[in-house]
Image 1 (tube, rainbow, N blue to C red):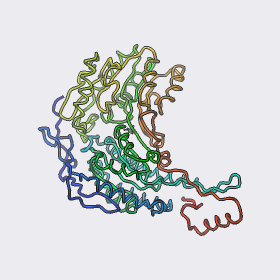
Image 2: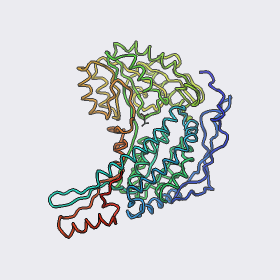
Image 3: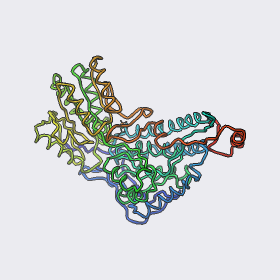
Image 4: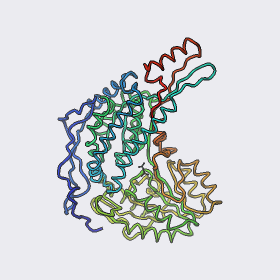
Length: 530
Ligand code: G3H
């Protein structure tokens, strides 16, 4: 691959570094005078390649981490805090205030998304807009949830007023590939339901939160959102060791999730909301519309360079069509444009993890050694921040690329004669998020669909795998996820049903009426939010 340096447009040049020298704890943006870590982009600002310095973040330690935990616990106030007891309408007003301010920061956040994680301009804009929309949808769904519970039930002589209540203190950790969207898809519903939170941004995609810190600070009561920086091991581990965390909300890898869970001394008390690894397969049957299958597999394997948990990470193609598939698919892969995120039409962009090209190269070398070939002409070409996607065929189960979640630009292809081969691999896999199934004969598709829905959580018919639309359930079986996320499900995942019950007698009923009429309780209320 030849040098890809092109002049950076004026508005995207890094002119001022983002020196994040505060962290948000207990409603205060505290000044940090200690050690800091530089944040670099793997994108070069000069023709001779070198990473670009973007700014720095505080390297906080155990003391600051526990300070954030204390702030979140104080705000929860053993259930008596302002936030967990606040009227739903007032919590919604805080969230609306936040999102209105957030919208004004779009350009700053989008620019940092491009530099920090290399996501191209349209996808960075989409990530921002989708997140804003997610917040509005969450507000609407919460209103509906509140309307649905603005009533009493009566069974066997017992009145019940049932709502969903918060779980307590949430530790929230997001991934680098969607540092805004996926993190907020945890944080926003957690806050909305009345929990208090400690949030540590991912290693890559951290500075883009700086423009939003003040909005967090001035929209929510102190201690509801605490934002800390530093290494997971240094800040998240001591927080877990206290046993004071009620929910671990993490999208990332299971190694960190397992390690963090294991530090909690009272594990039955810890709720988990986890989005972990996946190895989503595509199955291309011999009667599939090949043009459609190829174009969906291109976006499925390579949008954002394959750095999506929902990416297609292994392709199973029927042996009768595999040669044709490989020829046409490879041609399309080689035709993809590599460029910097702001370059018009850039489909492949620099990898944000400096060590990723080397890792992908290792997967390729291992596969070649074990009998695969690189099918496409440009596969494996490297620059300092990229490795061009290699289409590998024939891949077998001994190869690392078959087993490991590559989370990057390399595409393993296997052929099958009997559909039982991919079906049994999917059943044996450690993962169970989604599958893409390409074909048209209903008699063939029907039994496959009926089985696949029992092995994964979304069967995408003639289309690539994806999380959206965000109103649909996003989850996985086996090692891929714990709990379900969607606009609606996330509100449920971060809350628990809790209720007031009273026996049906004059004494109790008079008190209930009084509670309702006086509007003295924020929980016992049949007010209807429009
Ligand atoms: O990294 C996993 C994301 O949830 C994928 O979301 O399918 O919308 O790209 P997406």
